[in-house]
Amino acid sequence: MITGAAPIVEFAFWLGLAVAAMTVIMLIVTLTMRRLSQRRESIHARAVALWRPFIVAEAAGTEAPLPALTERNRSGFIRVWNEVHEPLRGQSTEHLARIARTAGLEQQLYQALQARSFHDRVVGLIALGHVRSRESFSHLARFLDDTSPIMSLCAARALMQIDPGQAIPMLVPRIMKRADWSQGSIAAILAESEGALIAAPLAAATRRAALETALETALDVAPRMIRFLAGVSAAAAAPVIRESLRTSADEQLISTCLLVISNREDLDCVRPILSHHRWHIRMQAAATLGRLGAPGDEQQLIAMLGDQQWWVRYRAAQALLNLKFIGSERLRAIQAAQSDPYAQDIITQVLAERAIGAVL
Image (cartoon, rainbow, N blue to C red; front, side, top):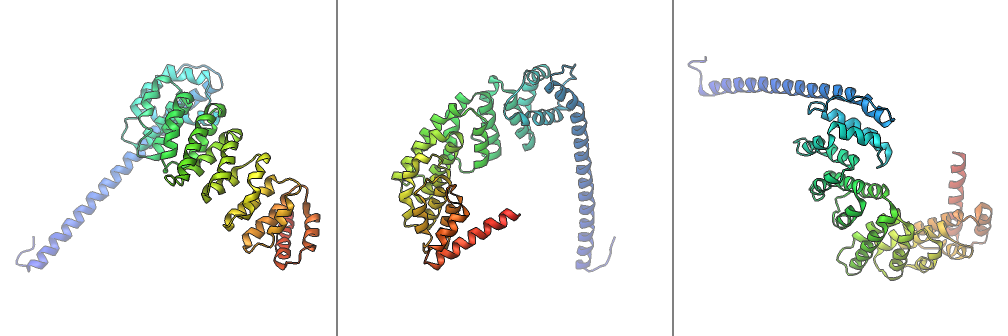
């Protein structure tokens, strides 16, 4: 004890003592948390090692007596369960369905959905989708509007695995509304489902979105919906793309349609856009013509070699080279016929890039 010291010295002493005590406490807490984390990881690893042979054997069609599925080894079971299912691309097998019934997995997963751990809830949602039990549909539907995009997307995928016909009317409005949903994740969910089943409602929603774009009430929705629809069914997307190219003034929607259009019969909707007043639209239209163009289309692309914008000239030259009926030799002949030095230079560049690519 410090006696007779100045107040500031006494204060510094007690402050230093308090800091030292807090440091020791924090060290003890950190070591305890690390020990608990290591213990959880050890338990999880033992559970994975316990269940992997049984679940993999079930997936291979070999039946074996199963150990009890307890709360302690549940996380390891679910991890192996999800790993085995992922390569199946949304499909399942009777062997895996049998192990789920025998182990009482569904009830265990309902408990996992109530866990405090975000990770446990997510893997529980994924696993319920693989179980494909209709009884779990209502449980999963509650998570569609979860504020976490990861949770809600996992729920959406699980619902589509269980009953696409019932899930699609619930899913499509949310695809339109939730900008926080990853487009790649939505496309993957839709790709796992039967295209014929979801094409019609998706096409109807895309038309509504295109109309709202025309009314300037939802300018970013229609392009996203066009992408999803084209990924699900090119045939269902074709009339929506034609209508949008002919009537829409929205540049983002036009650009998206040019990116995903795949029907050569719809080129009559593309050719007028080659003279669009915005250069990035002309550029995209030239690239589209390079993918789908027919004999005679090269004349419009040749005219674009003299465009004021470098990117338009570049895409036009690339498009000419990509046309199967043009080729390098004919493109050199086209170059020789050009009086515009910009047109000559851009053809030189794309031919050089092609040559470098061939060497690499």
